[in-house]
Length: 326
Image 1: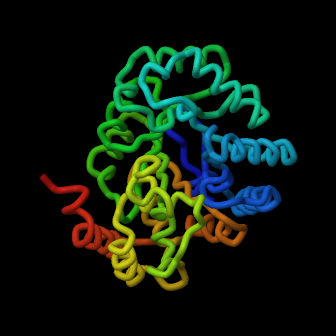
Image 2: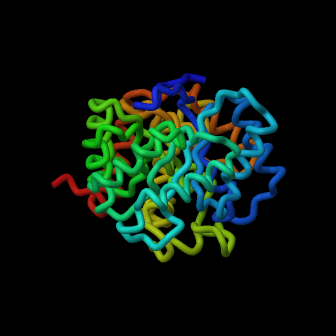
């Protein structure tokens, strides 16, 4: 699989990585053996980048990755985790003392002395412009607890603020065929600053898999059931914030663009990876087959006509509501 440098980390990572939110408990229950099989299938398919967080399943996702890496040493996998959601979301909670506690917990879960990449997990907006926060992160690097740090954001303005700070190695942002706003400013600014882009929610929580319908149901403890209007956390995390039924209509249009031999999901992932400045795309997988199929998207080619079709769909269905031109 193609490998790209992840921004200022200097680390080479697969263009398709693995998002592991689903290895926690926020997408329904996940069997521990199944989690190990998903990680193994991903690596076998060429994936060298795992993304997780300390709150995914209250640490279960990190622990699953830690077990896998312990049982399979020397794979050269880069693991990015996140911190900041274990306390009430107030800017004053983003302190060096709390960072040390969160990082120590993640190091234990992942079974490592030094974390490859730690990202602030969609903190309150003022945190991104607080120089003391970056000083604290620099301290963790100097102490050897983390190698690099970045941010995971909800909004483009937050990404742009983080990119201004010298130590920011990467930005993780929602980017998919139904969420194009980062293409305007964030990707060009990141590229100019040497900051890596990790594209998350690439399938709009599964909408862009082409497998959902009006009749599809989700488990009670699945965020696609309980967070459609942002009841629990930012609505952008669920179906990229678009209306579910409108999204289903847009998917029908998207399916007409998919090249022969590729699945709808693979085409969606391939389009993101083709955007200038993207380092890696991190789809999740609920089973081995999904993991293998997602990784295979790295070999799918999409061209200018496909790109133009994606932009037409976005303009026709979503732009007016969520991303006006002016």
